[in-house]
Length: 517
Image (tube, rainbow, N blue to C red):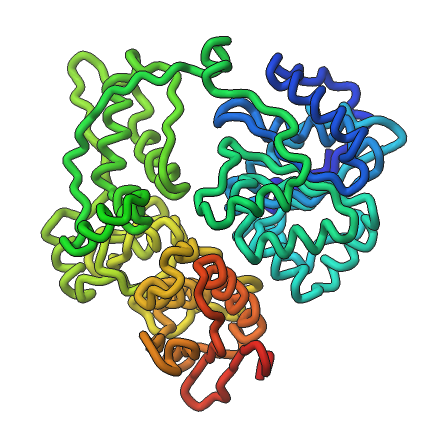
């Protein structure tokens, strides 16, 4: 196999893979595979669309890859695998292994798998090759590439012809307007679709009918959690409450609104919980101090960046506590007085997005590459922006981009929820975050979003001096499409225009009527 893991591309020699001992499916996976094969022979070759339902931990990705190997990939199909986050993309990529794809029959001789998204290390969509067999991409990236008729995407689809098979991970999200348009457009060209989900019900009751329209063959195979627990495949949950002593902050009026709506916990509260460094350190310490009791453990989190934070905290507990050792969170964090000084200096707000919730003090240059914990190397970020930055050197105290050239792709921070489609504060945070991370500095001077009137439909982002608007110009249509997708999902009117303003430069405007100026 010739593979560059860093770039998430792999070219497999199938003759070598066929010589490998193939991983045997578990009984519930074998049953699902049998049902999927029956569907494939009857409907799956001719534009069929159905859903595989397996609970978390039951091997949806493995089952899907094995099905693809035995069926569509053996029959010469190309595969377009769609998912929402880069972690799901990488999970799918990692599942295409020699001991799983050796089931692909001759005469196919090799298999080329590529991951496409705006995440560093992944390929931009323009790098898709006609010879690729499996393209694994985020919904946002593929929706934009198809909608804008990007040449590489168009060529890949044309090469597939009527032999295109789509896998839609987390299929219960498919009814969102922009995603269902993508699916319907591809299905119109005879593409077959396999949806993967643990919960085959759309959370928004007004859109539940779309699951039936998009997946008319319904549930193709299903295993229930209770059955797998009884069989010993999944562990039976045993609740052991632990108080983390962390209390999220919210206004009393927000609490009344939340309780009165009878809906799930608001996203911003979940974000605050997931972003709490103290809470995540407590979770890691709870495991470290009780390692022998918990033994092998799966920790489920609310956000992917919380996974990374807890994993990093666990790494600091790599040795079991001895009889004379008291395990404490090991930290390179500055002391509280320095943190207070930095937060005060930065106006008690995140320098990247402007929020005042869930604030943390971040090292501009990470400690492990020599950065100090002095105030000059520290900045105030919210947990969301801190997770997005990771360990990269990036200063949002600076107003001018340090980059020598334009980035190739937009960052992919989490979009506002559809419930916040008309929330001006949520959109201002999102626009500041995505543009500032694009330029890798505090490039945004102002975001103008009106609560009513013309400003409600016409938004603008003003850059500070010396941040070239031409860098962001080619990506404005993609940014526009992301915004419109959320507003449509939330039942709100489309924007009339999105304007990028910079001192001494011509404005760049995208709209439904004018395109890009």
